[in-house]
Image (cartoon, rainbow, N blue to C red; front, side):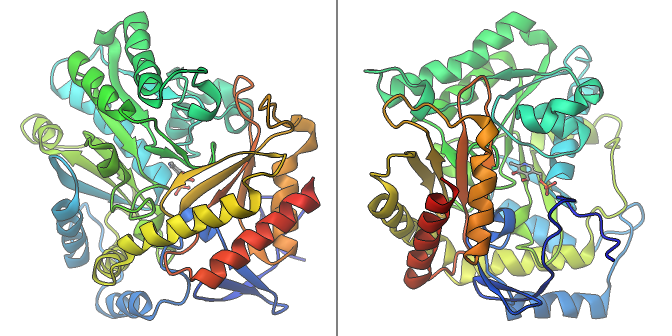
Length: 439
Ligand code: PLP
């Protein structure tokens, strides 16, 4: 009998024993095409020699040193590398173990920044419905996914949640994408005025929404207007690129394509590519200087901050992304995946929308294409797609979630950047079988 506490206690998963390229294998020898990189993690695929060797070499040299006493060469190198390529005036890197930790650090840094600046009344966060920022209490409070939050209500922090930018469902007939982007962004200003801008510390959003909305990209101009509003009211912009960063959308940082830069940026997942657990929070020089010239101590921290072995994996991953020209490849393979999805599923009566950017794409399933009516939640369609895909030998990331009745079921696709043309065909074929089986 297993003593592991699995996520799904009624469906304990098979045992994974090997990974190679875009495939994982379980202990019965069954092969799975990793069409979602787990949860948008395995950007380089499995068994990448260069990353494995970098991790091994670091373990031989120095596995761990506590950041309360010492920094390490890989942590310093990774910070330099990220800042060299980061947008705007991001200047400092705080290395953590994953995405939730990065978001917790971001929330606490935003708060401490205003305390140090002598504006202690600024403590409120505005975020969005249909977003996911992690499962720890601060990050979960920031997230707007009702299902994930439901039973933890008494533990969550009071924050504001505005509508996401969701063209497929919220753009009005006849409205241009640009006009809709502006209208959606202006919801931030409305909420600021409602709660009093002097009480707000930051706005947090995913540039491309992943887990809770199936690769939802923002309408043109949305984030430019968001940036303007943040500047107008002196609040910080926190971008959560835990899923969509590290090349996944075709640029190293997703926000580059929106033409803006944040005050705080969170990354994880693809940063370690699954070879080590690592995340990072990047912040602007101004924020860092407020702490440096103030108390001189960021009131936060975990034991595994700046972990040398994890940082060594991060350095090897970023170098691999850049040196192997994998980010331009994301754009070309992403176009092929999008075209293949449209060809196979574009006219399907239960496919409402196919969207995304780079190798970060989503398929929204609907009961009725014309009315865009979602399937009844009791059908648990997303769960059925996941099961059917798994049985067909593919790992993908379906989610159900109705937020104010805006959305139903979608499937998130985030394959390794090395995915070949044949594997794209295999992915789309298996997805189509899984959808038919689930329906
Ligand atoms: N933020 C986003 C956008 C995510 O998609 C996730 C995880 O899916 C997180 C934060 C939390 O990251 P982690 O699971 O590494 O804690």
